[in-house]
Length: 325
Ligand SMILES: NC(=O)C1=CN([C@@H]2O[C@H](COP(=O)(O)OP(=O)(O)OC[C@H]3O[C@@H](n4cnc5c(N)ncnc54)[C@H](OP(=O)(O)O)[C@@H]3O)[C@@H](O)[C@H]2O)C=CC1
Ligand SMILES: CC(=O)N[C@@H](CCC(=O)OP(=O)(O)O)C(=O)O
Image (cartoon, rainbow, N blue to C red):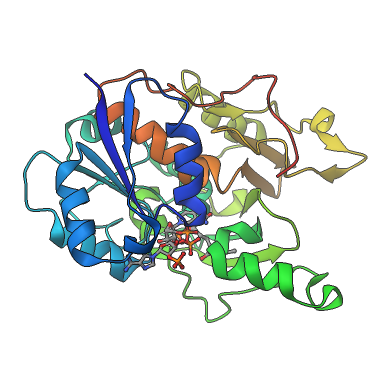
């Protein structure tokens, strides 16, 4: 029997990408809404309650509304928005968070897909807090470089329509230091406070690099830069979508410059550790539309439906890895 799946927000950036995945899966029947009925409440309500599982690829307010429309107990929900990421009744859809998280996702009917930048920060920081290296009261910071598809249809249109010279240079944003991913960054990293987080959007379509600086003199116990790499490598040794590169992996730099595109079109996240005895920099590299959104959503769907977690997802060393958009 096929699983019946509905994507609310089917014409948006993450919704379209989720359809790309679903269309290749034989055990899935995709329920589609007529284009002119996409925002019609009664039609959405019917679809939401007919499906075995729904993806919500909507702004936060529309996600909340969609959740309130689901009145049966059978429909599972995977929400891509920020609305439920720290809600106690929802499972946080990061299977690699710790050893119990997969079980929580499998058992849950309500799963929230992590924010893209939050995914990078949490996967870099949490194992170090759990190992007692980074103290819970560490004054953390991070910055991210992201492609403009992270801002959805509106930002994509802005970039495609604006005069070229206006958008050539990368643009820092969320300078109120209040980015919406901070609550989940704090909650799931295990830190007492959210990091000071400054994202930067660049004039390219997709690809995210979240950089986390660390000062070993502030650690709770002595740890060298190699210990940081080894702690992360041990934590994610059995994870098929997380790859920790060797310490100071110069082979992956291009004449000294970091390439943030190689994970594009995969569900892969690469963790790099750079530094020396006084300073450490961890960089998480991934596709904001892959492990940062739609890929992660499919990974969660697989767990909820009892399928192999990697079904339909492009993995680590897949030859399909590419750098285009
Ligand atoms: N882009 C990314 O990299 C990531 C996005 N997300 C999150 O996923 C969600 C979707 O983002 P994204 O796909 O980028 O956004 P887009 O703006 O690209 O798409 C949102 C879609 O939702 C539709 N929509 C808006 N309101 C309603 C409504 N009331 N009923 C039905 N449809 C509605 C829009 O319709 P219309 O086409 O008419 O505008 C649009 O097609 C957001 O919450 C975002 O924060 C999460 C991780 C990464
Ligand atoms: C360039 C850009 O604007 N990017 C988005 C990231 C989108 C994302 O990961 O997630 P959610 O919207 O689901 O939280 C931002 O920083 O808000």
